Image (cartoon, rainbow, N blue to C red; front, side):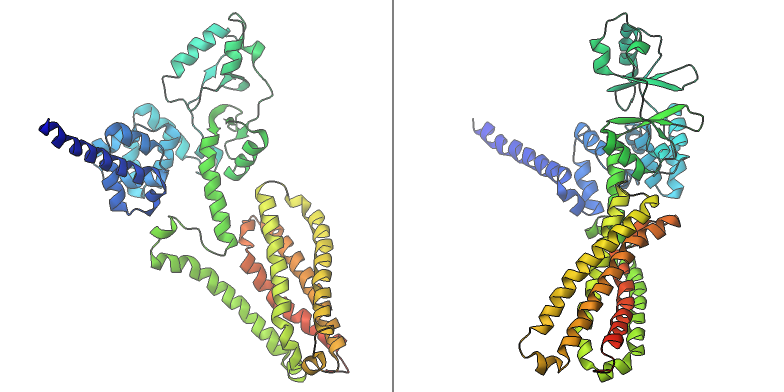
Length: 452
């Protein structure tokens, strides 16, 4: 009895250690671990647990774990992956490792992966899996089900949908597993298949693929090449990670930051400064034009120093309205709600919106000055004209900010650039410069003969 009691704590301790290792691997702590700690905890798992966990990692994390292994170990991990997942991992590899990794694959998978690597990784061809369930239209239901069982033993991406191809590999229809089981055994596949199949081309961008998935709520979409032959499928799982990366990239651009290649806490200080410093330098140079514009109106400021009190208020209102407009349009473009051809409709809509918002803010500014206690002591005898000046300037600057923020993404899209580059800080910088010009121009017109 004493021996058993002594052994039990050891078993419990071992179990606790394994649980701790798994908890570190399966929750958010994984992104917090260093490269060395990740390998240590990963190697502590038994093979079954390690395989399950490995298959759920991102390609970048998978590569990090196997990059320094010997050939036999690397081969065993690579051959766990479906062709599209293997292609994703190899795309993450260093240039001198890619050919080495390819050589470790079995001949059939190597051919499939090489074909996938020929496409850009953000296109349908680079995201697709070339292994899918194929049926012939003249098969009966029993034959189709038997054939699916045989194909399911290979690394097919999904068995939920079966794609019906003719002798030339052209897609002629699709049938679900449920429809096959619900049909009479002697029925032909062509009698129950759907011919109106949603499909995408091999060169479709991942952003547009995500929109197709969102619109039709499908689990998989067939991919067609330039010869109208079906070459693979993209599943929701394939696109989910790509869409997340696309959204992350857009958010970074909107914040005027270069895309981070790793989790925030894993980026070195030097790399972080490089990622953020470039845009800050560009924006800083842009803001210098604001100082130049103010220098041009130095004489007006000398004669009416009170105007400087409202300068930050006015230009920030324009920057805020521009940032709002650019963010809304960039997101609408990303979701496919707004196309390049819709620029005129957006322009008219944003003029009306800018005027309404500007009028509301301008009215508040006017009332703030006109009814403020001690207004004559603070703003002088011409406080009424000053109130009108500030109000009119706010309307003009907010309107201009709204128009600039909404149109800049269209201009970038027209020149084949990423609309997300029309970031809020960039729009705010543009509006700051022009806001100064609008403010002092309005002031010189309204206050001429009084304060000026």
